[in-house]
Image 1 (cartoon, rainbow, N blue to C red):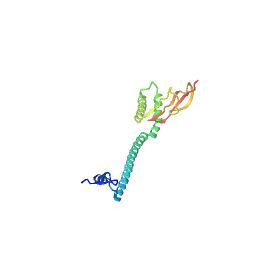
Image 2: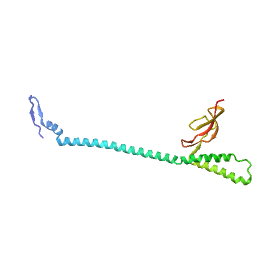
Image 3: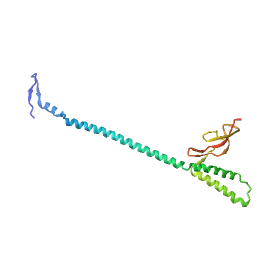
Image 4: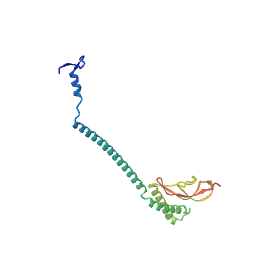
Length: 187
């Protein structure tokens, strides 16, 4: 590349042609094919971005669904036997009543019978505890309609459980049966 100096239209300063040619060569001349390819590339990048976003959402939805299914499965397992347990509660109550009414002085020939009642009562209580059933502690507590069912009222501290007439039970945070109680009137 040789430098040829040409006079400018004003004739004062010469123009360096190598500079002009190098400036022109760095600017690519857009062709219709290049413009089409650029548009296709931009379109493909946009579609890729959309598909990536959809993929991320689908993965998040799957994880949420899996977590919900695990929670539902756990809840189903916890409450699968609720009706059976509710059916056992009156039986447990009756065995406890029978156990509490046993005489202090028992003839030797009835000792096996009374021991059997005590053992059955204990086994049923242990079975319920193993399944997560808990007795509602109500005596002396403030009346709470979530856990207590007021059957009658008597003299005593106002809105306080003064006697438990029938035990109540919970399974996890679910009330299986509220405790039937006598509450104070405040007199």
